[in-house]
Image (tube, rainbow, N blue to C red; front, side, top):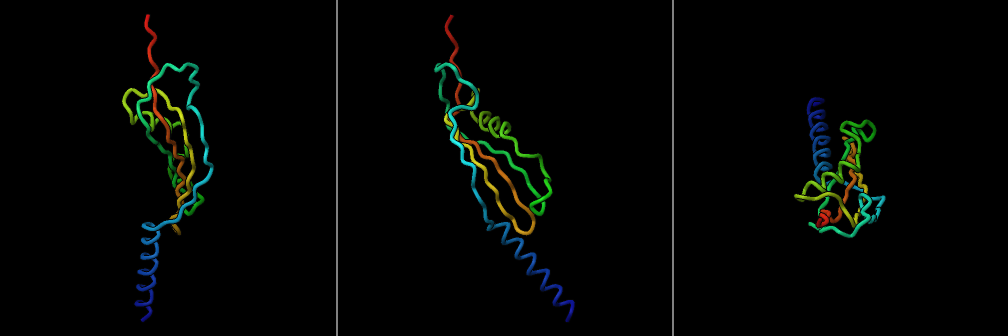
Length: 124
């Protein structure tokens, strides 16, 4: 009888963890609207398209970082590399999300979205 209670408890706990992995709660904050990722002193560029990138970090039990830390430069680089020939981004939207996977941990994500551009070459 005691073994049956332990098995039921383990099944309920596993089920609760699985449900939270599929249906998790999250929080969005720190919305930032920016004009450009790097200084663009000239207006000689082509807009190649709109794209997004992200960087994330998993915290075991919401405390211990398990993966690489958040890095906004990696998120920007990820976004620019998605469009061939892109050099930088303009019209940026940056936000931070925290997703909760109780009781396993949390995932912090920094998201970047914007227009990827390529500078025009001056004719000689």
